[in-house]
Length: 263
Ligand code: SF4
Image 1: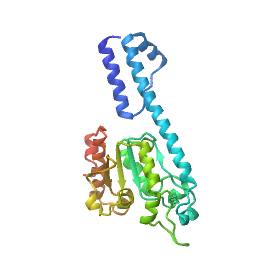
Image 2 (image 1 turned 180 degrees about the vertical axis):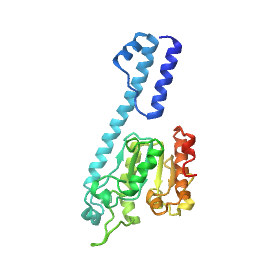
Image 3 (image 1 turned 60 degrees about the horizontal axis):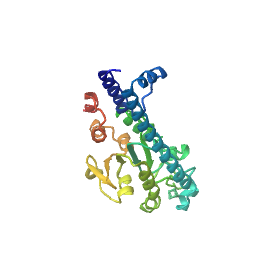
Image 4 (image 1 turned 135 degrees about the horizontal axis):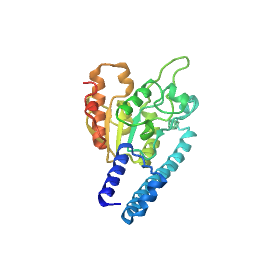
């Protein structure tokens, strides 16, 4: 293969990786042709060994997360929640995600299904991710609290977690962050911020600018449930501007159309 040909291969592989965060695939014939040239073979080996290391890292993280999930599954530190929950809601997504979202606590839908952000607010989060060119499987989503806050018998809806409940459950979330080591964290709503940072402030004061948690850049934005209650385009635009900052930080490509959503 000629050197310009090699440059084309390198550029194509990099484009695939940047666009999808997945390992590019090649047919057996293409691999045989690549391996025929010594420079190309070295390039291919370097590329596949780095992809292999990424895969191994993801497997290790998945194992570590599974161990925490097992402990959470039988946790009874908040006796009242352990009694009332259907199941714990640990978290979902890629164990080696660059981007991690943190919400407050499971609601009724999440308690039933065992997965965070599956109700109406969760469906909106999935649409926001799609607008950012992410699939749910590409990111990691977890809550401060792993059990649904209990409600008085016969009452409907959800309640926010108490400071004590959040403090009790917080170490599990910190373990998840420690294992995943995302490049960017996003906290959804003031309760999530209080649970993560112990800071009480209004969203007006918190959102739209970078904070840090343990040296990891942290963006704070409204909880999707807020957008379900306040459907004004100006509020949607605020959240979208926060997500544009996240995409920029992650060096994701942003189209002109994406920049102009909700304007
Ligand atoms: S909320 Fe967290 S700390 Fe409390 S019982 Fe559930 S898993 Fe355990």
